[in-house]
Length: 348
Ligand code: ZN
Image (tube, rainbow, N blue to C red; front, side, top):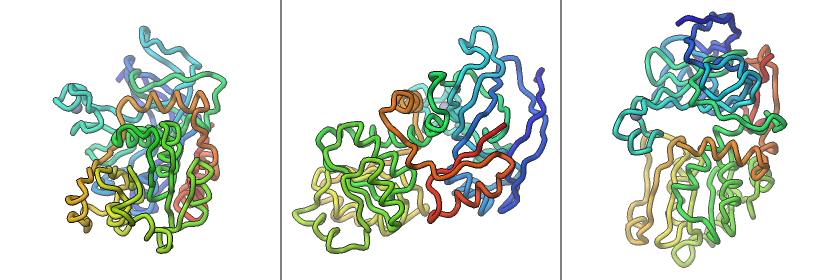
């Protein structure tokens, strides 16, 4: 540690204990200093804020949250290829890069993954919600100076969606169902459309989410409790070639097998309860494949390119933005599913 910088960081220490505090950021000559411009609030940030935990990761010490962020290079080591002032999206993944899974190119499954803004390990790995953050050069993906930072800040969740698309295989001409039309479900819709899907139907209990799903490219958006429609999806062994389960809700998970045609595939990316009831009988007799999808690998770069080129426009999902000073208001707005899809924080 041979550099330091006074920063203002957005820190969560326990459920509903969140504040902006001054900290001294210490980092090495080998690291890159990024002046953070904006960051999207993700479900896990909201979970840390509301419950002091996200899934199995429990807060044991104050942690800077945030793992969807973009900024400008404020300092970079010689030979990094990065220049001061350059716009970058920061990949929050820090795999160990030497375990068997990493060597096989499956870095998203690395058991030593130090994912930014995650309390999985102790000490926790700080996130990017601060006016400055120190990261590794390999985490920085430069993007065009004139691209919209609001758009590029969707790179991380879009990378999750593109990884899920790859887990599904070839989508060209396929009939696709996406259960759950939150930000991730909606980005899966957009990515599936970009990947050539012929028909994309979305479900969500919320009318607001269904409208967003259609704005993001869904052919139709359906209330999953509408049995007149969902009964048709189960006729003749199932209608959809591919089902992306993006809600994590038990009822949605259980419903996917009935909607998927024989030899079809279900991709589970909604994170719900650790275990749930699942109808194995129809899975077996229809020879349906069930695939998990977790985070992303090089899809992060792909996501930056798709956003930079306008191949995907995520802005319908951006519900609100707040300056860092209004951290609590931003988190409360992001927590209210009736109010907001994606909320971004803006750093001065
Ligand atoms: Zn590894």
